[in-house]
Image (tube, rainbow, N blue to C red):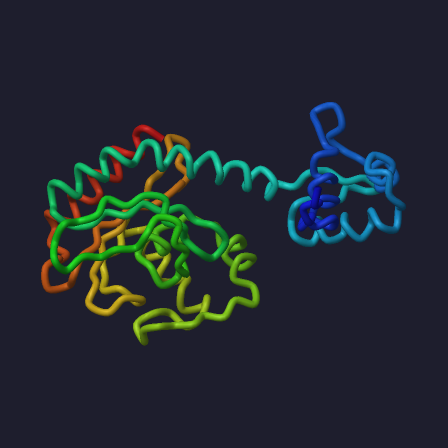
Length: 249
């Protein structure tokens, strides 16, 4: 019987194993305790621990380590994306039926947005981004909404060394250009503009905010700019749908 190749990364497994060492009974561990739990040398454990610390998954307190908030953020984003998908589907379908335009729902992952739901329009000229697609957040209306909720230090961390590859001269070319736009987006409560990625497309986006005040996702109405115009009534419909979803998050 032919043995199947094992493509697993031992380094990744060790890193995940370190994170799994921590528990309610062991919220802090020394380097030697981590090495003993994984049956590896202290020098090997040190390399993994330093990497996890620098990436924001562990924090050091004197001679011991504990989980850092970024670990919780990973799990929270997974739960949030599931909640957003389940809750947003029906209101998104209703908005599509009411307006005739495509409706997308997305969540933020790093510097990208991930499309988790799409209610597709039956118009001849249609905006069609498949579920699972990843797009740069700085160049999308939903991404701008999601980024506008982040603290400045989080933005600085996410975009450290990031290359702003613009597909439109209208898109910001740096984090310094993006930040004031995000401030305006946050104060306005929505983004309505021509697409920086797809010629001829216009979209209106609004945030999906949990009852705890955290932006978990975003929704947009998208269509051809010859058909979709950002009048107050249409913007109001998008924001009303976003509020409906937000009340259930």
